[in-house]
Length: 49
Image 1 (cartoon, rainbow, N blue to C red):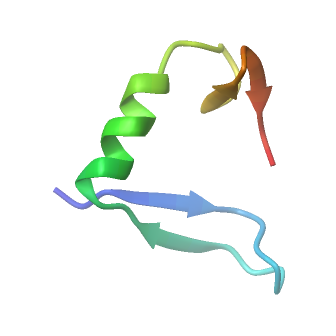
Image 2: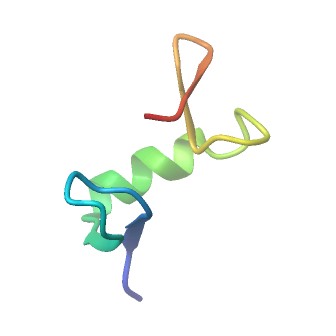
């Protein structure tokens, strides 16, 4: 299984996929469900940038 984060907005303005290692996938899975709209939170607040 490939683990890739899809970034719709990058510095040069083009979307791209970024490969994720097992540690990164584990962190994201731990954050799932903590907020209904955003992937992760920081100190209880949505993190979207």
